[in-house]
View 1 (cartoon, helix red, strand yellow):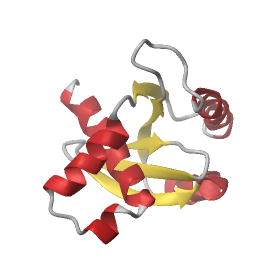
View 2: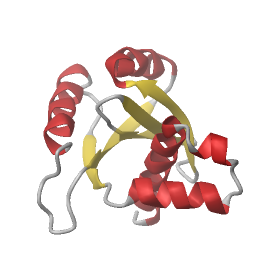
View 3: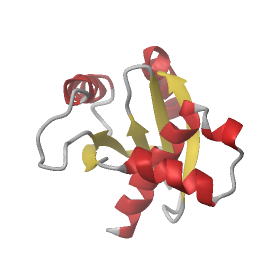
Amino acid sequence: MARILCIDYGGKRTGLAVTDPLKIIATALTTVDTKTLFDYLKKYFSEEQVELILIGEPKNWDDSDTHATPLVKKAVERLKKEFPHIPLVLVDERYTSKMASQAMVEMGMKKKDRQVKGNVDQIAATIMLQEYLRNL
């Protein structure tokens, strides 16, 4: 059984989340330096079966593009080129970073850990993935 991988793509860091093989639970995987993302994905895909890639699409509340939208579009093109055998779906990432920060507070995460920006990226990817699973 194959997993679904979700990417919260950023200019500096990229958060990753993944489902279990039965696609029931979304779990934070890691945060990687965006420069090393494709090397990380090549290694991960050689070890794990992934049937679908989700990537967060940054949009403003009025559906206009954000400053990050061109970066994500460029990453989408590269993902399609380097991993053409894995379907890719864009998902709405509006407010996921804010939701991730709020979730960390509600989980009782220490302030020091909440300030680690990579934690926010992983949790944001997990929120997007869980929302996708809920809507299946």
